[in-house]
Length: 171
Image: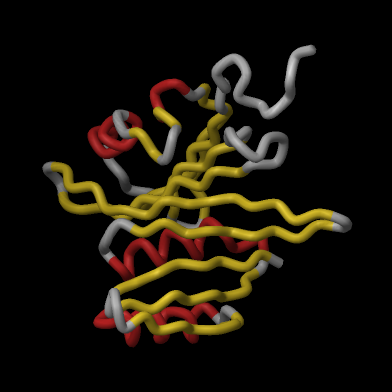
């Protein structure tokens, strides 16, 4: 199981809650911030559906969103992150997520998944790869494979961390 935490404007709360109920995710808590007029939501989902959940969430919110993901494994907690946004191209606007897995280093992702709709044109893929997400330039990654499943185009990437970015000191 993975817990996902993200912040949305209060006016999107009903849409997001409807989505959470439809996805059968387990709502852990919701916190309201009067200062920012937003809510922070934490849900629990199965690791097997993370990509579908993120793409559908990107479609529901329609705004850029950062998601913190906590994966608990025996004896350790791994913290990953995802960035959700929409990209407009000549054929329309598409939801996109970029999921960064930090399994080896806490500072640089070792595995990246880019996801969007299965019918995404090449123009969209090019636009996404021209972006910098967090500290990562997607053009600096290496494509491992791509696949279409469950109505999604998923592109799996490997990051090539800059020297000294793995959190391991060279003595």
